[in-house]
Image 1 (tube, rainbow, N blue to C red):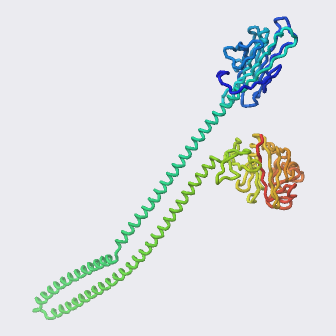
Image 2: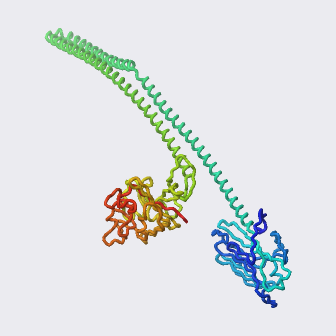
Amino acid sequence: MSIFGAKATALLLTLIVGTKQGAGVDFTLSRPKWKSSTSSVPCGVLRCEAGSPSFNGDNSRTIRNMTVFKTQTSGPGRISNGNSNPRDLTVLASVSPTQSKLDQVSDGRKVSGLLKDGQAKLRVELLKDADCSAEYICQVQEVDTDGKELVTLFRLLQPQDQNLDNIHETRLTSSICVRHLSLLQGLDVKLAVMEKTSERLETKLNSLETEFQDKIINLERSMQDKVSTNFQKMNDKLCQLESKLSAIDSDAIQQKVLTAIQSRVDVLFSKLLNASERTEKTLNGTATLVTSFSTNNTNFQNSIMDRYQILSDNVTTDVDDLLTRGRNLTRKIENNLIILKDDVDLRMQRLESSTNESVVKSLASLETMTSELNSSLIGNIEFVLVKLFMPQRCEKNTQFLNLPFKTPYPVIYKSESRGVDSPILCDTVTEGGGWIIIQRRSTGNVDFYRDWDTYKRGFGNLDTDFWLGNENIHIITSSGEYELRVELRYQGQSKFAVYDRFSLAGESDNYRISLGKYSGTAGNSLGGHNGQQFSTFDKDNDDNSGGSCAKTYTGAWWYKKCYDSNLNGKWQAGREKGLNWWGFTSGNSASFSEMKIRRVK
């Protein structure tokens, strides 16, 4: 990239007599007080130095190159217009990562330079009087963390003086600092980044809008399909039921039963007829036999007649018994038919009632399913909107959209502090917001008389009472400088205490507390605990020789001998064992406490 490639819309000139000292850049031409006639003594020494951090005050930039040029177009007593042609420039010295150290003599000039640890220096000893009267440019090239270049030029001009050889003390001319080029280049880079960010955001919003519309259409289609399927199944079941009901006809059943009875009776009469025919044949045979023997034995004939009479009586008795049994069977079948009809009517009533109940339950289930789908859809949309527009970092003066479901205490699920996996609760309202809540006591539904490991991990519910965890607090406060704010409520009054510095050491130092300067209305009841280690009932780190303060006062705190404050004490407990802040509650238990921290650097 050419250092003269950009057009400047404005020219900023700073006139300083003697040397040019920019913001972090020293560009000077010094001459000896007395001019020497010896040619080996330099008539002047040209220096250009830039230090680290960046002379622009931006720690994200690194010096990559420094070059000193001599202009050819301007002679003694002439001032250029600031638009030198690159062909009119002569490179005197240059340092870069490929040539970080320089020490040589060239064209009557002794040149030395160094680029190391973000600092750049160039020194040129001028032996010729013409060189001491020329114009010079010092170019500083920087690169930021995104790889973008920033080039700054410093020009050193010589004044017109016709009697320069007759005076013994020489004063240097003013220098011109051309800074507009770097400012315009930085502005162009920022505008380009903003345009790309705006385009990505617009593309993402359009994609989300399309995705939402597709999901809504798919849900509507799915609901319609499920409703149609359920109604079709119900209709099929009702049709099957009507078919079965139509098939059940009491008159038809009675006719079928009577037909079966008639068939059975016909079979019985057929068997009786066959028996009568066999009996008649037997009687005929007997009569023939009697006739054949009648001539021989009358007594025998009489005996046969007696047997015939007995047999005839037996047959008559069997026929009567058979008829009686047939009539009894007919009456029994008629009774069974009556019972069967009543049972069919009862089953019909039950079936009709069950069908109505099933229809009601199906409709109720369908309404419940529709309501759940609507609730799920609304919940998903709300979750996506919260994820898009709610703050992702807990910082002071964070602005976010005025959504109908927004809360002044949003939950941030992914902390910016590496190693903190727990969600954090952010106060976006108090004093500009940006407060991370580390402790809250408001309902008393969480027991704070816990052991060391529990206080290390954290416990409770972000919606009510909780402790964020000593390890999480240590990781957060180790990432920068934080302040602490304590808010209390007692007997209807609210007060607060602020400490301009707050941090916790690691577990190896038992989470020792460090506090800064106090301000507020509740009294400095935590200042006396500054520098103390954290104690619980199973790990005593206090200075009390008379026993464990955590056990005595049923809490966990940075006890000394024993306390001026004890906000992790037992809820609503008396006898100095509750949520105490001596400067406000005087040994009594507060009804609300909240501890919160905010990054200041």
